Image 1 (cartoon, rainbow, N blue to C red):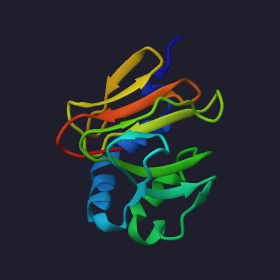
Image 2 (cartoon, rainbow, N blue to C red):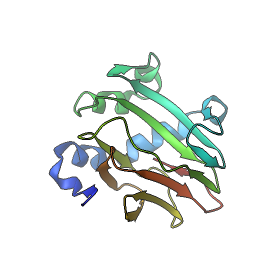
Image 3 (cartoon, helix red, strand yellow):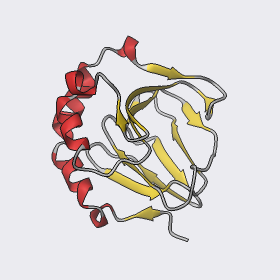
Length: 155
């Protein structure tokens, strides 16, 4: 079974790629001490995973329009049915293999800050996450990510 999809099949991925510089600039302005740490044991096998929640269950988080205006305007143009976050793996972070909540949901990753040792594994396939590029994959399949570099990886 093929778990990764051609991003060009999803029109909103073009919007994300076109606005990548603005999305990255908004992320870079956010103070690092305000990023929420996901706790060891909640999918985190090793290292540290930090997130900035932007949308949860189709509802924007209250601060998104103030601090991430471009990103907030783009969200209105893309279908979000579960959640939306900026997600940072600190160096040497690895998630535990897991499955999403249900089949039929695709997850989309836009590379914000990446490196050659950041990878996404879905089923028996894997891909690097490149800056400004989009990966689309089946959330219901077993998957995990890792960042084995000495720099952060943010999607």
